[in-house]
Length: 79
Image 1: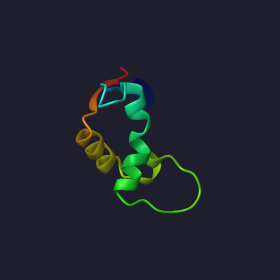
Image 2 (image 1 turned 180 degrees about the horizontal axis):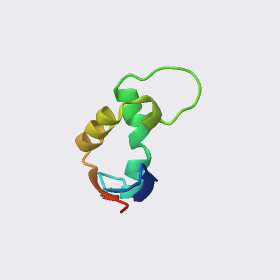
Image 3 (image 1 turned 90 degrees about the vertical axis):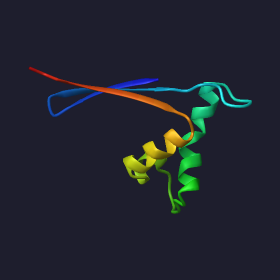
Image 4 (image 1 turned 45 degrees about the vertical axis):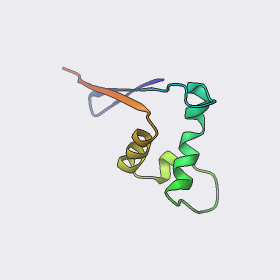
């Protein structure tokens, strides 16, 4: 999957590659990753928020890497 967003006159492109893992294809595997990370780092509370919003980005990326999710990014600045 690839996400492209713009902020502060920069265009950032983030892409992750999900490979099949065990009995799951790539899409099935990454669908469950965010909730699994939230549980594994001990997030508790009430209500519904995506785990990416309640875990620091550094910790979230560290956990993605542990689960063999390859991340690629680039930053381009507007002239």
